[in-house]
Image 1 (cartoon, rainbow, N blue to C red):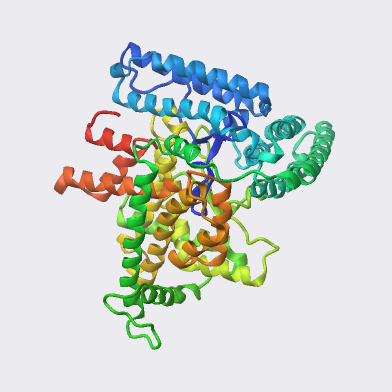
Image 2: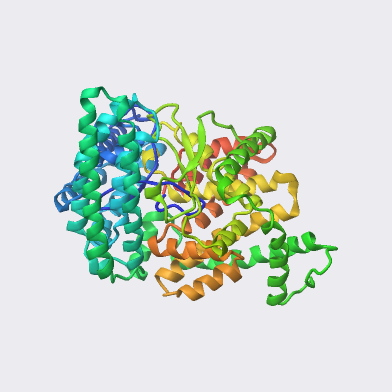
Amino acid sequence: MGTPDVNGFLSRRLFMGAAAAAFAPLEMAWAETPAAAGPEDRKFADLSKRWLDETLRLNPIGATTTGDHRYDSEVGDYSAAGRAQRYAMTKAVLGDLEAIDRGKLTRDNQVDAAILENQLRGDLWQVDALKDYAWDPLGYSYLAGGALNGLFAREFAPLPNRLRSAMDRMEKLPSIFAAARENLVPARVPDIHATTYSNQNKGLNSLVDEMAAQAGALPEGERPRMAAAAAKLKAAIAEHQAWIDGALVPNAKGDFRIGGALYDQKLRYTLNSTLSRAEIRQRADAAFQAMRNEMYGLAKTVLNGRAGAPPAPANPTPAQQQALIEAALELAYVDQPQANDLLNVGTRMLKECTDFVRAKNLVTVPTEPVKVIEVPEFQRGVAVAYCDSPGPLDKGQDTFYMISPLPADWTAAQATSFLREYNNRSMQELTIHEAMPGHYLQLAHSNKHPSVLRAVLGSGSFIEGWACYAQDLMSDNGYQGGEPLAKLVHLKWQLRMITNAILDQEIHVNGMTREAAMEMMVKGAFQQEREAAGKWVRAQLSSTQLPTYFVGWAEHHELRDEMKRRWGSSFTEKRYHDEALSHGSPPGRYVRQLMTGAAIA
């Protein structure tokens, strides 16, 4: 779950340097490990618990978001010394993992061992080769903002207790700024990363103000400390802002493209899949054209009998295909939400989606609460919407379906472009993906799996792939009455997913320019200018996460088809979905192996 897309899961990060692995929540007591049937299983249980305990101790901000509140007053050490400590721990755990005979583990533990090995090797590679602690400042931004936001997003403890932890962290947060200044090499930082960091750092002030405004919940004698901590932190933010704008931004000359060698290595660790970059591209190219052809057929239905519609020949030229699909989509673009009403629209649509899933009996619907809120200011500038699930040790806490407000500095034309893209039918797709039956539902199921390790190391491709599959599930079952125009908008979203996989490697490996990327998105994938421009920014700020949607989506469909063949007449959607989601969030290949009885590999 790395950096979130407009339709992406809000990942949490465990930091080796600045930014590191995608991180999903866990549920259960630390000491328990499932299926510890023999001596090797007990060794693995002890090892995985040791890794998790040490990782959370060394990454206290991440620990808070999992629901482990032992370290709520700490921020961690992200200096070179802290990085070295995490590196040594990771290397030691990997050595001990290699000594375990995996053939003697239960099948579930074989899966967890493979996932842990991928994580450990990826963490070491990140420090040894990628070295993003030296050039990607956004990890420090997420740390600083998450340190406070994680204490107040959910009411896991009485407010005075959380305020005391916040004061402790506010007093220690300047160490993160110092680590950023120590670790970052301005000449290696890409300009887009530096400018985004500048904007996000400014957003920390609103978080501090929110904390200070709640000081009345403290006993009177403790309130002066809150005022002093807030003032000191705001001064540190201002000092750091001066460094960002005076030293980092003017000297940020790095290349945001990571190149083929690093890309292929990172892709392997991100996906934990056997698919290569070339295989992904081959599949995506074929799916891209197939999706456009399907959209053309639907566009003919939508425009049938409408005066002034473009010609719709059986064998269109590329220009004729383009014109007809664009004309049909124009009918959806005029049905827009109000710019200041996106949260209300999301809330209404969440209920509609939930009612539909229950009525169709598609999958077991969780009872955990979910709310629609604005994206916090310190997280804006990368994506339009996120799903933020609680650390499931925080029982009964809210999941947040978060939507960003339109930026205040946008022109009227930019706002119009955005609302054309996020028209009312498109907002339905967003809500399905982020919440029901997408990320919110899938993660609630995932958190019920007994493996703590598997919950922490959730696969981005499984999670994002499920959310894209969920959009197909709703459309195929006639959501929005099976309306052809709604189906056409749905296919546009799936074409966006496919395009993401192509863009990511084209940009980072093959040097695709902004102009070529915009052409592919606006013309090839029918995206509005604001959506395409935002994706261009997103593609510069991240790498190898954009393909997770397409790869995971394909894996989910392939697994469903296989189980439908195997189960025959006993196949039902609810049975399949509940079973597929019962294994947590491991990479798709492991879910297939667990469900089919194939060897774990």
